[in-house]
Image (cartoon, rainbow, N blue to C red; front, side, top):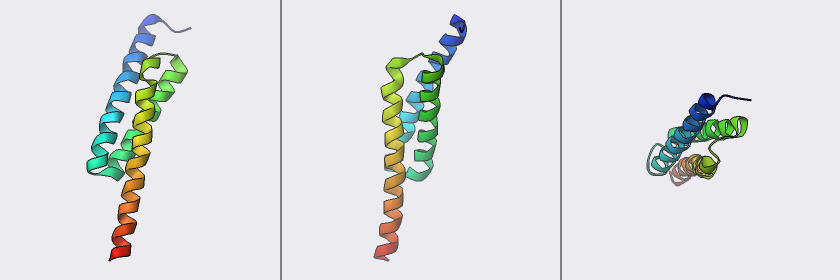
Length: 89
């Protein structure tokens, strides 16, 4: 269906997106959780969509899923921090 060059490029793109998403989500746990969490979530979704559409880089699927979950955790922790800050005055 797709040429080998396209599949190789999409595989590299998915691997890069998954790695970058994981880095963003891990850094987001320490600082800038809301911003980096959203960026990590979006990058992880891009990687997962590329993997699903082009059927490439299946070994990076777990990495992208971990990044997506950590991105959600980043956002939830940020929201909980804001709520705690408001509640405690």
